Length: 351
Image 1 (tube, rainbow, N blue to C red):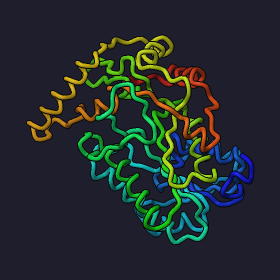
Image 2: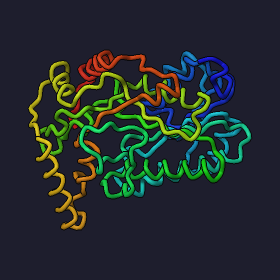
Image 3: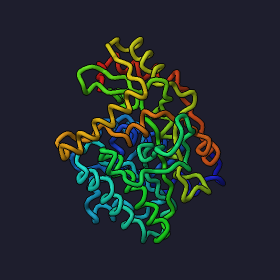
């Protein structure tokens, strides 16, 4: 990228939260590849730095130990930074309260710390395709940045979706009311060496046997290195403030194609294909029983989730390509090859 197209110089300090995670460590590496020399990584005192070690051996990375739940730690981390890449999120929590605390409250603390900075040029908030809904759209409709997001994310039965939708709204409010320049980056399914499970968009093994719910649906995959570069560009590319950007790769496979490749290159296992009408009925019955039991059976499968994951969409990365000058460096065929190879070495897990 030319110096004219960037909003900050490579020697300007940048902050990455969630830098010890699967995607965060790749974002740090991508920043280094783009010539950034002053990268700060905020990590909790208990965080394992293993994923960052390879980057740290080749480049200087300033690791700041702290917690986003501490306003003082946030103030210390954002001091003088030009760009904030906010990847930290509560991804493992099943509790809505925990997810809200570790995604929304932490984001608010970071925004509060950043809003008084005279140096901040961009706040990049990492969202997710999980926030979208297509309940009112036809099957196979193209899902892009103009599509609706969940207006009642708590009804999806997913703490992660709920927290990410609330986080997006919070960032938008701070941008509008308090003048913080921001970009929302919404990756699809991020995959690559280090991911061990199969995305629920393809199916679920929760019943003791894998139910293939995806069928002919396209899976919005993005290889981790491709996604990381798009995130980096979203922080430095001029003219994208206030935008939401979807990140998916080219040549996306269908769920059926992915599962066939997985069984061929990783391991064979028994799966039962569930037709679209049957999967909808399953979700409706599960949702009804969950309501009748007053939540004793969590509404993991419900009609809102069915519309988001198994109804079927087409996907586009045209906006990210146009505004960021981004294109996936790793083709899908090569990304899947690397992913399957890592699964064979580490031992796969069918979720």
